[in-house]
Length: 281
Image (cartoon, rainbow, N blue to C red; front, side):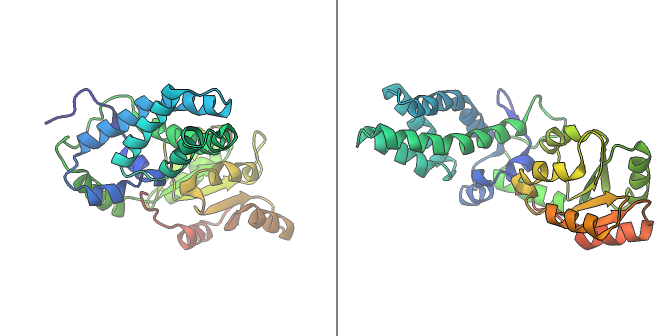
C-alpha cells in the first residue's frame, strides 16, 4: 500500500501538538498505519469549517439541529483518534442546548471552545504539506513504528539555534563560530519570526536586544506564544552590559546575555550551559 489521494503531514510538527496525544494513541492502537492516521487528520480538517460555523451560531444563539450534528460528528472523530482535549467541552455545549435548552450556557461554552479550537486547527494546517515529500514512509508502516524511527533521528540531530539580528555581519560571524556544533538558522527581519516558528522549532534563541524594526524584547512574547517554546532558552545579544540592561533582559524572560563584540569562548560556554535537546512533542 502506498500514499494515494490523502493529505501529507509533517509528523514532527504534529508530535509537538500536545492536544493530539499522538504518542498515547500510537501506543494504544499499534495496528494503525501512517496512512490511516493521516486519513483521520484529513477528516478532522474536512469537518473544521462546519464546526467553526456551528460554534459561531451557538455564540450568536442562532444554532439549529444541523449545527448539533456538525459538533457530534467532530466529537466522534476526536474520540476515534484519542483526542480528549475538546470532547468534554463539546458535550457540555450540546447538553446545555439539547437537554436544558439553556442558550446562555451553550453560548458561553461555545465562546470558551472557539479560541483554543481555532488555534488547534491553525497548528494542524501548518503541519499539512502542500505536496508529497521526496522521502516518506510507506502507508502500511505502523504509526508507532514511524514515531520510533523519528525519535532515533531526533536523538542524533544537531541542536538548532535561531539567531535574530538586523546586522548581516553579526549573523555571518555567529554562524561561522557555531555551525560546527549546531544547526544555525539566521533571521535579519524580526517581523518574520512568527512565520518562521510555524516551520521550525529551535532549541535556543539568540536575539539582538536593540533593532530598529522590532527590538528583541518585543520578540519574547511571540516566542512564548508557542506552547513548545514556553521554556526554550533565550539569550540576548547586547552592546550594553549595564546592570539595568541585564536586569531588564532577565525580567523579560531571557536566561542570559552576551555583550557585543562577543568573545567566542564565552559565547560557546553560555550556549552549552543553557541549550537543551527538545522532545518532539
